[in-house]
Structure formats: structure tokens, C-alpha cells
Image 1 (cartoon, rainbow, N blue to C red):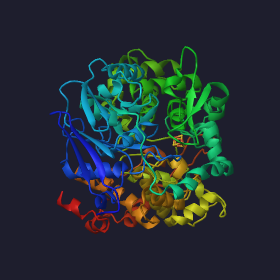
Image 2 (image 1 turned 90 degrees about the vertical axis):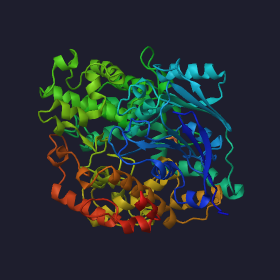
Image 3 (image 1 turned 120 degrees about the vertical axis):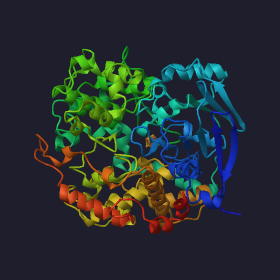
Length: 631
Ligand code: SF4
């Protein structure tokens, strides 16, 4: 018998209505111990290549980690894995809140959805009781209204709900899955896949029953968070001002993506939309995920305009709807955030796609005949709400923009593709590769498109050698020191790859990177190993955990290779190789030759074929993934 627990899987065929409970044996679960690693393992067992992302054959997996639900900060996350309608690659989306804890509390590590229901349904899980129920009354409703109807329908308030809004129902390519009305599995269009299956919601009974393996050893680890918070100014600041706390500073340095990435400088608006301004004006309270002492989530309220039920904007949302679009009005951004949570839309791709449309409009590639009379000039606050509504309902120009900037650019033509700031069709988050080239490298090679949470950022390598950041990064192999973040050399490439593997462990174990990340966060690598031991009885090491992270990345690349992806898609938008237009970063650009040289070095570090950029047979076998070669 394995020392590692078996994974409990709920497998639901929405076409036939069949519900199967099965297990993945502990010795296998240990190789894919949760999150999208487990999701990928299940998908690659059964799903053939080249499936249409919106066809019934696409599989959709919600998954957590074996110790999700323990009473410790940063441990309530969930992955959703599927083939993405936005990118055509593997789709991976992480989200937090309370839902993950309750999903695990009902006894499941993963819920798999296959097929397509003949009519709108929701799935209700109360431990062994699993019901597929009619959702006709909730279909078409925004998330807040649907939540109320679902609770009424069940006659039970003690449930947590992960659902799609109208955008998912209309299969907007970047539709999200929303829980608690304000937490999103936002990226990669996982909500559209849910919509394609006529699945409105997954509803779980509020049950918590995860217990630590060794309570005496676990207790001091959980309790040390108080002291760690007092000692760590960065994390304390994250709690006080949210992820948006640094926005103004990014603009001052010239690296806040502005005007659809033409410049990194937003002097006319950064102060108005930064986290301190949010705290001083519209912030009603701070929210948290289950058991997390950091409490970084924003709750904003503007009477008559913004309902606190829908939370508040993160840094990325303030960037994409703010500086990307030259919008310097915080209430407009808060309203946009609410609308995205109501309709179930990823704020990053939505705001970035609107910024793309604004530049198309200013360059004369589209006009008021295309926009239904809307003036899409940069900075026009009036058009944000109508555009979000049109995108969610696929009305007018909203239908064009609902498939993301890359696909819209192909339809618009006339050079519009140069204005789509995306990788593999997924719009870039608000961290500039010109400033953080290692992040840019991961944007390019990441299997599911540009993502800022898949590796550590370059800026931590300019911290003093005796700082906690540098000490922890040394533990995962980076000892190089830099005077500035702009460099991309051999050490930086290794830093990019190693930190990507580490972040991949976090996403597998469903740990919040603000709490468990590899540099400035509360708990470091040693704590993560201790968590595995005292929380689960898993006697592991950093070596095993890094292999877990590397394995997940390689499974994703293998999935993409089956779909026909090669290194041709591992590219950054051309705009990043051109000089920025003004401000402190005027003239700064990425060096193309240097960047693609670094990409080749990354492939060799990763053990991927230099011609195709895909994992080699020996790399797959090294990672215990030889079974994939038969697929
Ligand atoms: S740090 Fe923020 S996002 Fe992470 S678990 Fe805590 S409250 Fe949630």
C-alpha cells in the first residue's frame, strides 16, 4: 500500500447523466499531486488530440490538492484544466476563495466533466450525494442573481458555488468561472467550455474535514504566520493596499503598460488608479481566502455604481481597464471589474482586447460603422460598460471582440495583428518584458499563453544578497546578482526555468504564490516541505517537488505538441522589440536576437528539442512520463 493517499475523482458525463466515483492510486497521485497536474493526468488518459475546445469531447477538470482545507494561510486554491478556446492549447486557470476548501471537504480531489447536457444544468455535491439538476431558471442570469436562485432552488444557504455568467453561456473565448461572485478562475476561457456543456454551476455543500497528518508538527507552522506577517513589510503592504499597491510606482519607472503597450508611462492617470488611492476612496473592506491572514482581496463600494458583492479590482484589472485604455477614472475601473464578475469574463483579456480595439479605432482600421456608433478613442470612459455588455452577449462589435484580440485582428486585417499584444492568443498581463525579460521569456514559452504568475519576476534579483528574497531564490538555484532587471543572460534563463518549475509546484499543490512563493512571501521552500510532511505525511524534498513542477510543464507541452504547436508559437509581440515612445523608459526595447537566443538556451535547459521546442523522448522518460509516448 502506498504511503501517499489515493485521489478521489468524481467523473460526470453530462450527455448520459452517468456519475462515476473512482480513485487514482497513491503511488500515481504522488507524481501528479493535485491542481492542473492531476487535471492533465486525467485528460491525457482519455482525451484524443485535436478535439474542438467547445465540443462535448473536451474534458473539463476542477481539481484541488490533497491537503486543501488545512487551516493555514494561502491554501485554498483550485485549478481548472481543459483545452482552451482562446489559445487552442492546454488551458489552465487558477482561482481562490472558499470553494476549493469545500470541494475537498466533500471528499473529492477532482471533478471531471465530459459530454454536453441536452439542457442547462447544475451539479450539486453533498459528499456521496451527487445530483445533476435543472438550471433553466438560472441560465441567462448574472452571477449574483444566479447565486440567489441556486440557493433558493436548493433551499440551502450553506453551499458554495462556482458558476459561469452569460459570457460563458455565450462561449466568449475568455469567459471565466466565478465563485463567491468575486473570485475567478479567470484565464484561458474555461468558462466558455463550461457553457458549451450547458453546465451553469458546480455547487458544493459547505463541509470542511481536512485534518493535518501530524497536528503537533503542523500547529507551529500554521501559527508562525502571525510573526512572519509582522516581520514582512512587503506582504503587510499587499494586505493593506492589495495587488494594485505598486501601480503608480510602475508608471514612475516607465513600465506600466499604457496606451495598448505603446508606452510604459501614465503620468495623467497612475495616481488616480493606484492601490493607495483605492484604499483612501472606494475601499469598503478587505476580504480573504479561507484561513488566510494576508487578506489581500479588495471590496469596493460606490453607491449606485459598484456593489461590494462583486469584490474589487486587482492590479491587473486596473492596468488593463486603466492604463492600457488610458482610463484614469477609478470608479469606471471598479464598475468594469463588477461587470466582468457579473457576466463571468476575464478582466485581463477583456480590458486588453478593448485597448486593442481602441488602437484599431484610432488608426482607422475600424470606425463608428463597425462599433455601432461608439467612439472608441483612448480614455473614453463612456464606452467601457457598453462594450463589456456587448462582448458578454456577443452583440455588434462585441461578437468580434469576444474571441480575443488575435482572432479579431485576423478579421479586421490591415495590419491589426501588430496591435494584438498577445502570446498564443492570450493577452499579456500588466508586467512589461522590456523591464522583466525573464518574465517575457516565460510569457513566450508558457504552454497556455502569456502569464505573469508562472515564474518569479526579475526584480527580485536586484535585492541585496542578504535579503530574504535572495536567500530563498538561492535555495532554488539562483545566486546571480544584478544591478538592474533588464539583463537576459545564462543565469537569468536558468532563473526563469527554475522559478517556473517552482511556481508549477505551487499551482500543482494549489498554494497561493503570495504566501508560498519562492522569494518575498511568508513561507519559503523549507516551509513547503514541512507542510507536505506535517500536513500530509509526505516525506518529500525540494528535489522531488521541483520534479513535480517540471513534470506538469512537460505534460502541458506534450498536450500542445499533439495539437501541432511548435516553437513557432513561442514568440512575443513585435511591439516589444520596438522602442517605447515616451517617459522614463523612452527608447527602451527588447533585443530580438538576444531574446531568441535566450529562448534556445531555455529549450536546452528544459530538455526540449531545439527544432520544435517540444519535449524529447528522454525528457519525458526522465520525468516518468514515458506512458505519454503511447498516446
Ligand atoms: S494572499 Fe490573498 S489571494 Fe492569496 S490566499 Fe491570501 S487572501 Fe487569498
